[in-house]
Image (cartoon, rainbow, N blue to C red; front, side, top):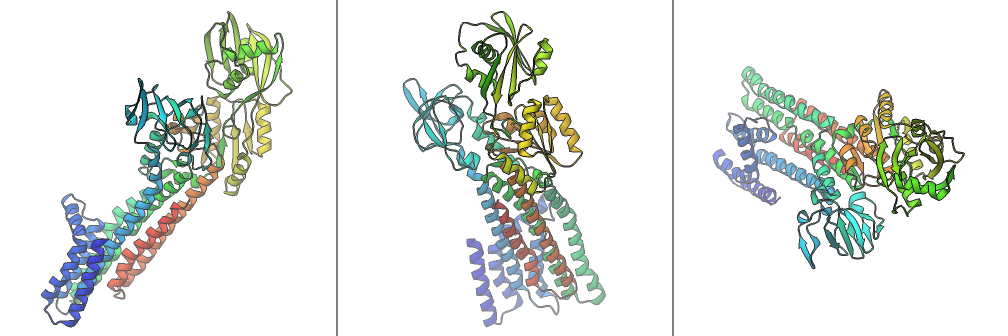
Length: 611
């Protein structure tokens, strides 16, 4: 900016000197070369380097040719000097570049707020000392201490202490999260109050903060369809307009002999033709959209996904942890041949090593599972349940399909909820009812999607038909399919894909295959889930389904702004190109058609930041 202001002052001084003196054309050229080189040296250098590397048709080259031509045109017979105009074109070009840098900086800052989640140090207990080291030097299993006001450097489990965590950088939510002994804690959160002793569970490079940053940093590399179009357009458009500029300058000049007039028009043509507004503003718009989404805790893996999000017609949901809380509790125990405690006892033992929410609920209902019982031959079947040998007895815990597999004569339950059947050596022993709650955010989220133009909402779940039907009825879903295995979900999604652009929303762990198969895979409640970050296209850093409608809204707004910039730039450029050819345009109009439109397009692109 200093060079721009200095060149502007020198240009003003040169204009004053020209009005008060009677110098030769060469003397005035030397006078105007001073501000020209001050502001344009970098552009000339870039143009020369582009020529050297075989990239001649860049905006730097086009601007250099146009301004040098304007400086030289005054030496043609009967031509007026264009020294002030030449310097002014270069000055405005640099001003446009400055606006671009500022806008890109703002866009990057909108994403780089996430960079604040990466801590610079960690306090690790080694022996009797507390050492301050770089987080990369801390190994999984070591104990770190997080003081109030510090960022959590690595994922882990709280061993001692309780506190509130500021998770706004990860989730976009301002409500603090309380943690205490035994709770998981994620890197990137800010410890607000108490001192925490944390046993690390992941290396620094594998922690949540590092994975999120890698995701965001790579997002801008995946170009949208609009960006790819602009890139291809510029490659074809620029050579064409250069040839046309030469034809405008040379063709009529050969016929009329008025070289000065037609070279001047050719230079105008060249200035107007620079595709800066398109090449700069469209990618900047998408970059701003990605940044605006990240501020709301919506991480979109690439600008190419904006096109798909904007055209969503079908949204398919998993049930557990997506539309429901995913926090299960045992609500009833119905034994057949053993008492309630023994039924819970066996189920908790069989599910001892499973991380499924239902397994956690069973273990919570019978916390005294650590006893002298022996458990072996654990066999888990996805979508069915688990079979294990407990004290020499073959115990099967799962759904009706598992009961049929082991030959147990099961029967349905009148209570609503997820029914977990138990069989001992093939004999039906009873069932346990586990209930889940629909998220308070689920119904408003579905209404928002319908309002946004999504035609169909569908739920696919491995849960029982009765449980799924109850949830679907309460949320007024268009379709519901229950008792599905992971492969069945893929089949259903492939069927629905024929009806239009489809997004699947799941937890990103059990649903990784279907997340990958959908046009857009959206991971719900993915805070800290490696599988979600890897499998999904869009990661929502909290468990609110309403963020899906927000992502659609951001994508559509981003595309609308990009289209506005395209029409603005192309429309004005075509109009001024026609006027330049007819001799009705001036260098000032050409400057506006290039730099002025670029500035307007960049300012418009900045609107994408406000998601």
